[in-house]
Length: 267
Image 1 (cartoon, rainbow, N blue to C red):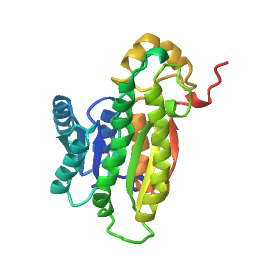
Image 2: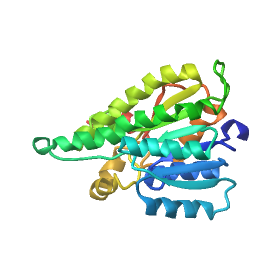
Image 3: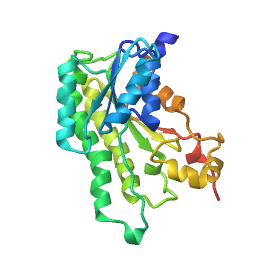
Image 4: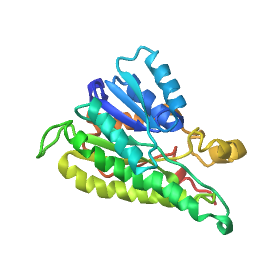
């Protein structure tokens, strides 16, 4: 049974993999026996610290930090070129990097839309598109069936499904669009042996959520039927499932990873 959920020997890229939700995802793949887990973001210091931490724990694989500004086209293409120099294939891409912008409706700036939509949506497409040739090499089959397809995992948000309490117009719109883009990609890439699925995350401890949780943790937890916010192993476990043989037939799904907050009645 353990082999059903194995990611042993796989090569993985996690964007934003050194902090918050991304740290939990990276940790899961390292613990699960992935051969190499690449983390990419523009924060060189946090990348190095996280990589040193993971590599000191005696896991069978190696964690490798790659500095890249994923909000720019050049940053994305540079990251792809670096991976192509290092690896013959890529088994799993986790698109986790993202940002947010909150402001009252009457003050919401135009700049927020460019900043948030570019990183959260536009460059996610760019990175997935440019890494597709490397992912196709993971199975080396032009025609199906593909018993072990390559995987793309989008880290979405419940705020892309429900109406959020906070005024995060660009963020909510970007995540709703990301969910739909993931479904469209699932239909196209599935024909080539690559699955694409989304985890719509609820409240997790992260830099993006820090201020919100500090201001209203009790109220947020009160809206989650399971009575807690997400832990690193929660998101890691979902990613491991989607990346393993157990998740090899899942394609085009949007999975709510939120403790049931979407089905909680708050009248």
